[in-house]
Image (cartoon, rainbow, N blue to C red):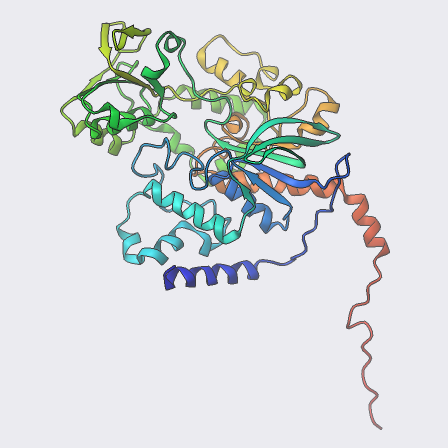
Length: 475
């Protein structure tokens, strides 16, 4: 560790002490039905959202927290696995994981390592640097993370949640008063795979969020489908790896040029959208989901730097099947052949497709229960989202189910419809974490308010100053 980074950690320690009052870890200890201790909050996912949420809880003096992640240490989230852009897509001044402490901000960490001049020259944050920053923050805070640990089941345990974990040492059960699912944009149902893909041999195609051996694509014909940023990231990566040709197909007749969603990036929207009534949420989100998002300019430049890019518009795929050792892909413009295909087709929202959440789905309220959806693509998409409270909590169909499901918080792609863009990505993270922590703190306190009163009423510890009497004045 260099001296500047050590100085930054000392500064962060000082800031945390400055804002540590009151320092008492206040939630009462609870026991499960079998007598084992409960954790107050189990966080599923130790990527950027999980780290930010755990840090926010610690700042609220909620310390009985456990994070689990199915990946190896350092592989959490997409940044060094399936994120194939070179930098983050957001401005470098973003905040979020720092929870409002300046010394915990990315800029402070970056300048401590490379100097203020390097920050001034930085345009976008390299994704590997962002991952390194997250790991530094996690290690500094000594967050209790269990890696290579996946959630197998979540069940009711009174008003708590019984979580079965699969660990390198076998299965174990944790009972949690609260569960936060912080699993990113792909954690609410998984990749959106077009039906035609299932007709092709699985080893000849991959979704853009899956591992791809790009070195093996050198000299090969690659086909990529999708108009979004991830699709073009994969095209650029394949071209840079030496693919003979990449045919990039887009269903639209032209690439979008205006990113209207940027308009929504302001504090008022991030903080308050979740408090709107259903009708106004629907109005915003119908437009939100109907708007195309253009691929980033720098990603397009990566692609256009290669003469063997074959970009085809109005070229949506309708079929894909084996043809010799490769694929035959059908479009409205005819059939072409490729050696490998990459589907940049986004992600779906389908909690029934998340194995550990599926048993709870019948008891949950969804947006399809709150409005009459039309037959168009946008309303069908909206209808699939769970209906969440402003505290990012699932809602039960009955009062009995609701008493338990309010303890399940979906800080992932499932929250977009109810909360706006504060549950996915980095831009809205400060407001998402704040809403989550406030709701968890409120519920844990309300659950034990009567016990707190009893302890308050019985409190009889003398204050050191209570026995003080002024000395007699000499006459």
